[in-house]
Amino acid sequence: MNSPHEEHPGDARATAGRTALATLAGTTLEWYDFFLYGTAAALIFNEQFFPSLSPTAGTLAAFSTFAVGFIARPLGGLVFGHFGDRIGRKATLVVSLVLMGIGSTLIGAIPNYDSIGFWSPVLLVALRVAQGIGLGGEGAGATLMSMEHAPPGKKNLYAGFPQMGTPGGLVLANVIFLATNSALGDHAFTSWGWRIPFLLSFVLVAVGLVVRLRVTESPSFSRVRAQEEVVRFPLKESLAVGFPRLSLTLLAVVANSAVAYVFMVFTLSYGTQHLGYDKQFLILSVTAAAVLWFATIPLWTGFADRHGRRTMFIAGSAAVLAWCLVFFPLLDTGNSALAVIALLGMGLIIPVTHSVQGSIIVDTFPVNVRYSGTSLILQSGAILGGGLAPMISTALLDSGGSSTGVTWYLAGICTVSLAGAVALFRLVPEGAPETDRATVEPLVGDSA
Image (cartoon, rainbow, N blue to C red):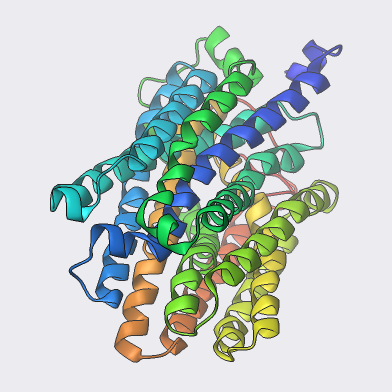
């Protein structure tokens, strides 16, 4: 069967480029909203929504509302995945962006605990659920949309553009957070100025919609629809790839999520409350690390397209494990230079695995159930890894009195992921042909 690029040789590459940039823009805005909440949860929400609790308990409560968004993500993944496989990728991605933007904007308008008491955290949780549902539909859809438009031989590169939205959103959220804080001062920002970055979501999402509405439907899904291969229950059909491959794929990607959220979110509260680092110093350092993360993704995805991604992914998983063992010891010195090295190291190492985990997951499923299956793996990994990581880390810190427990927690989950990756790539035959057929069978290749 011809590829969409063979069917439309005149403009296929230009369309693929526009799609990649559109998915990058959309995921950046969605992750902006999500990370903005994480930064606020680490630094602001304990005082605004849980003032009657101790600092540690308030931070734990704030991180629990952060985790709620991850718990809601599978619901979004299931709903958007179902309709993405039934009616198309484009429409579901537009709706997910709108839902995420509305949730974030309204968070900026919630009265605090002193104004309406109990209802303040209740509203915060409800809107966090809306955020989680919206993001649950974004990750899988954007990755496969860009990947299904990719020119031959550039699948990993194009699937990496939506992955760049994660550090891109973090950079955007932290820059706006810091700029607002600097313009207003700490007192005004803590009392009311923190709302401005959330309210700004409305404008950013409007811009994102203009970009996203110009994207054409995925050629792969268009073929599925034209050949009447749309299935009634895509999630159920996606499970036919088999439990061993599904479970090993999930294990292989779960550590990246856990490590990233400890690095991006937990570090802010831990560094300011327990180590005495300046808030702006930490945010700037995390932002600089995210810039490295963003900039190196195309390098790693390009390498994967040329040389295959399995060896790269396993080596990257081992490197993440090794860096987790030194990350908190470097932070705990209280030395700013060593703290910067710890954070920049994360920014350099995380993208080795993060850059290709989307394409690895997408390749697990045939095109007619790809949105549902990919959402299942991504959102399950997000809950097991990222959503609970800041809360677990805070609890371990409180119970042990030091970061040692957090280090071993990260090392443990990294070891599980490394073992899962090794087993996955032994299970998947080397050099098996890739296909875009709408049949429920494992889709693998040298790059898997």
